[in-house]
Image (cartoon, rainbow, N blue to C red; front, top):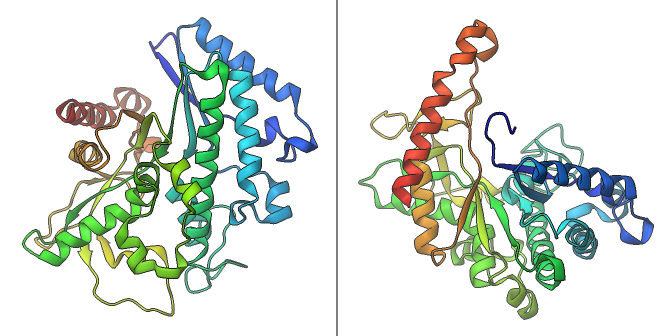
Length: 354
């Protein structure tokens, strides 16, 4: 990393590497702490700033078995304990922290579509799922992720050796353009999709509650915050982490099946790669969801600046995958002009946002 002039490195701290059974009461793994101490010290010795992520979807299996992981509010205390140990052990040297990585991806992927661990979903969403309730569990899980985030931030701000550090959450918003720019309903759909994807976890940390449109559409399936929880959530970040990769067109969907709820249906939005005129929003990347639209990064940042009070941002992820990379001659891989172009255009749009 030093040889290629990297000046920062983001890594995740494995919960079970610190607390093998997920709970403070069941013991701390000193070898795990030593591993991260050595990693952090080596980074700093080479002039590389560490940025640590506390939760990147690796819920301890013991907690999954005991109470269902993030389906239970019990996890909030255990996550705070884990976070507190990390702050006390590493906070004198790690000055940039992320509590949760991409909460919507974890909640929807694991508990609505059932395509990511723990693979829970209704049968109408994923026939391979053995358990789950789409349109319900993702909202419960995200609620507990937010409560865990707030508790971790409170612990961080009480940590004596962490006083000059900063903490936030890594969000992964798409940018939505209206499918038909002249259609009022499609313009409203694009805004509604942003609220369901970005506002779902941003609004509570800025305003203490979910977006009004989510409360209206999701209704009783969306948990609510107590006054105390709302107070803890408001202002619970020093910066916003942005993982940006892709954008889509948003087309309004008037009617959905009320008997088969899921997160995408709740938006009343269909995601489209092409607009009404047949124009693709961007070149197709190596995976289906990766559509290259560099302007989307600038638009996401401007959206968040205007909606959430001009916060500080760190671009915590951005990149391009090439479907044909392994089929190319090595010299072509090394030239890598697609990635060069991708990063150049995204950095240019970042500069425009600034």
